[in-house]
Length: 247
Image 1 (cartoon, one colour):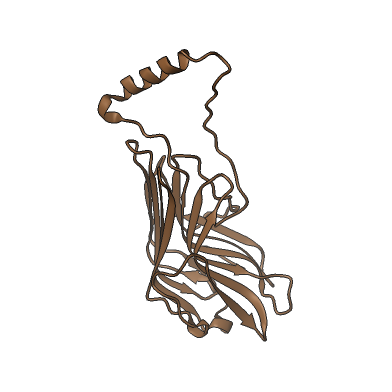
Image 2: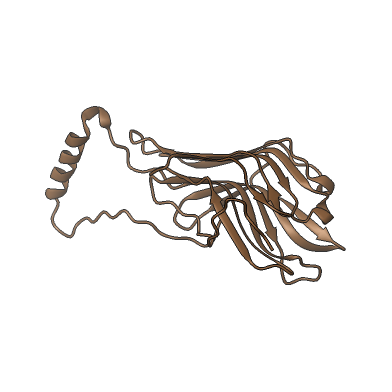
């Protein structure tokens, strides 16, 4: 049975972000292994541009699945430009899930970040000291959506994606440094579910606020402009939307 030291068990939520929003998490998982009860843990060290803007978790230990060192996250918004930024890092990673097949996976650091400006969205991943055991090697700066298949007697039982970049339905971008996905429903399957390390999500940039001219003046001019437009001609709505599950 899976157990999380100091973890709050809860269901995984879809990644999403409205314009001007950003968030980051260090570790989260949802697994159903053969012979064990289904379990979800995390997100650990969640940060959000609306607060808390930074977060830290000393370590995460999930016996026979995952052990990490310090987890750090941050998310921020620049009201002057409307831009947002998010970053997540997980240190001293030892991934024992599938160890009998992979020989064990370790990383000194798995880091992701994303940024949204008026020019668009971008993100990247940095891996330090990555050792994939029998799976080969991965570069320090892997290309977006670099995939490695884990096979048992010639059958895929898992897929590991490095620098996973997911463009969500609401226009936001999620960057996962490492995403382990178990492939269920096949011969040799060990279960189903996901483990995600260092995830950052940025919504599209919000509207800039020229604070140099005074927020009150800006808001006043905005209201004046709206009052001059006939009713029904314009409607401005800021809303959140959800997207399919993305880590």
